[in-house]
Length: 282
Image (cartoon, rainbow, N blue to C red; front, top):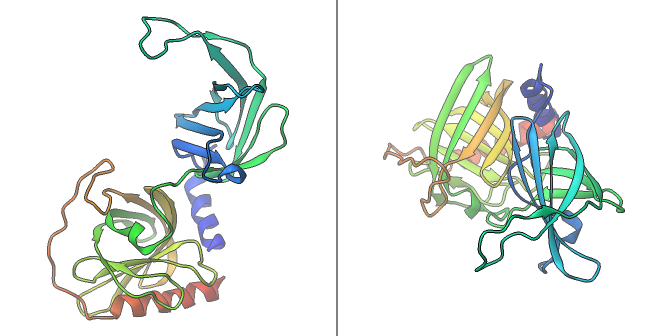
């Protein structure tokens, strides 16, 4: 898994100063996630600029918020963490907040678009991660409409699929989820060297393997590798969730068409075979 994803990231980042951008949204200090109120971060990266909003507490227990912004270079960021006060409250008239000092700099080094490490003023470095509260590592989380776009020596290829029907788990997975005619299926891998990622296959209605996909994802976005008939060379793969399992769009709405079904069991068979082959390569 790591070898193939690192290769994909290397290709994506060739000639670029930034191999990835952190996902916008709610981030947490990983060790502080315990189901109780605590500290949290909202990150937004646009065109090399990172904005960090943080909610935390004063030494006396009062809640407060901070803001930092600046350049994100080589997956690293450092800027003063500014405190603000005096702004509008619920029911107030127009009021403008003012800067109320800074406890010091906040520094972040990102290890992927969804993970990293942060150093707060007067604290040691700790791990942070994109907070995924909507999609458990379970088969049902793969339901919905997805796009798969890969590029490389085979050219630029794209698939749009709606994963709607859940089947039994394969040898290394926790439950196969397929489209309506069972020609495209994906599964979370929970054992072997691919554990932690998602393995997908595309087959024809005769049950023959056309393409394999392997990726890691967070919430609605994923990156990984794709290859023809389960063989090299690998292509860079970009994955995007377009709708939830309830059909709610995450940005684009797509309706799948009915197609002829593939033989029963063909998707599961290819998933297991590819898992063994990829595992042997690592």
